[in-house]
Image 1 (cartoon, rainbow, N blue to C red):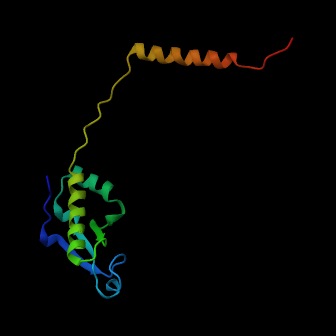
Image 2 (cartoon, helix red, strand yellow):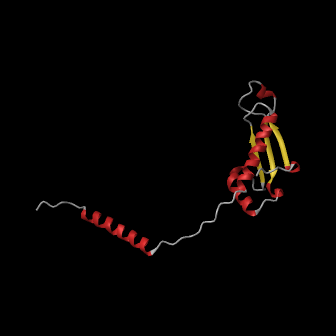
Image 3 (cartoon, rainbow, N blue to C red):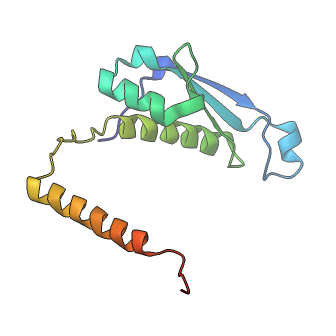
Length: 133
């Protein structure tokens, strides 16, 4: 399920980039910084919580997700990469983890565990200094 970003919520700015491009990097702003208001996306509560975990420092206190792409030489490629990364984050946030069902060990399992502990205890207790009477 590929999430589609609403165009009216996206704010893009282009910055001077580092990396490949030779002297072109000094002249042209090719890095793309994409900002999107996460609150305006209207995500489900579980997806919003998961997105906060996945985004980490990319998510500001004001609920703005900031992604910077600067791996490519062209604006268009960096722009597309930033959008793809945001979509991937949102898609991963929508994946629900199954609820963990708490289980209780059986009496036999508890007994086996205690017996194993007693056995180890006995082995360790019998290790000691040897007396040469």
